[in-house]
Amino acid sequence: MKGDFEKVSANEDNIKYKNMISREKELYRNNLDLRSEFERDYTRIIHCTAYRRLKHKTQVFFSPENDHVCTRIEHVTHVDSISYTIAKYLGLNTELTKAISIGHDLGHSPFGHQGEKILSKISERDLGKKFWHEQNGLNLVDNIELLEDREGYKQNMSLTYAVRDGIISHCGEVDQSVIKPREEYIDLNEYKRPNQYAPYTWEGCVVKVADKISYIGRDIEDAIKLGILDEKLEELYKILNFSQTKKINNSSIINKLVLDLVLNSSVEKGLCFSKEAVNMMDKIKAFNYKNIYLNERLKPANRYFEIVINELYDNLSKFYDGENTLQRLKESSNNYPKFINTFIHWIQNYWNLMHSSKTKLKNKVVFDMSRKEDYNNAIIYYISGMTDKFAMDMYNEIISF
Image (tube, rainbow, N blue to C red):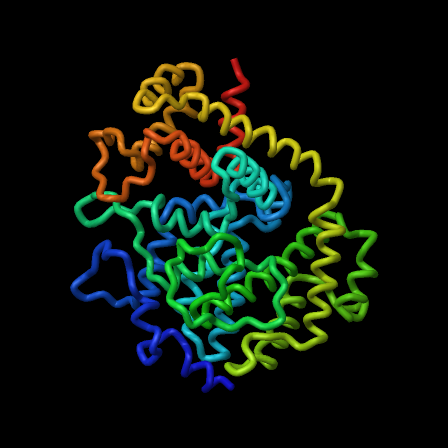
């Protein structure tokens, strides 16, 4: 079985390899680079600002007093660990799974999935399209996140196709009994909805499965720490088929599912679990939705998130005036100095108006300021990149006198 997967791994012998490592353009290259193409992508991702912000973004529980409750950056690290274990055992390319894993949630907004839902409502209303974090993640690494080259110019990240594909194809919320990679080399901008296409690589499939294994286990462990499941533990023991002496935690759930996956998967069948494991995962997911994600204790925070994100968006959107937008923003900066000036500094990297003379740029122009839709789209990108705390700080500046 391991040998079969080695034959289809992301390496030079794979017929799809040239497509996998293709880039839009080269950022820079050392004369003697010790890293593979996917290792270079891994390094670029951990150096970008979107990755750094993940440590202050909600996974499920907002602003917990317990420092050991999972944040978004811990989640991507867990996915990295799980996908590495699976890929190594099967004989797939662990360098590719690592790069996809740490980049897969770069497009998540502040306040977790609730923030994503709020931004999607705004986007549907004003732009006629949904906002979803997998597509936003691809847009961020393609157009928004910038790295400095050797001359100090800011350029787009220009990641390999395989990593970009893994980011937009990673949706772990959709239930699938079997996952196999697609054969077609498509323009990734063709994606119109989550899970529209299978990943292009087996490694991308591994990350997609690892994402689901990670969140269903860790969310339970965090909920137990916070006392949310005190009255539901007996039901959970039955679902997991654990004896009362066995500790329910992330490690025990992950081990059970990873072992089941690698023992039941093959190139012919695809990545798949046993019927028993699929049934258990379905029950765990239903249990989590009922007792964790829809828990009454989360609802006050969700209402607050709606107020914060809408206020941030509405306050920036009202300043649109075509080529006069910059002037209108500057005129209001005395009222909201940090909020407005930070947005000006950010958007000047991407619009078709004059760039800041202090900034050396070689990146794409993304927003045409003759179009209000482009400006509103820029605001959604901007908010999606915020940490929880920064979003709240900007909201507090707006409502303060």
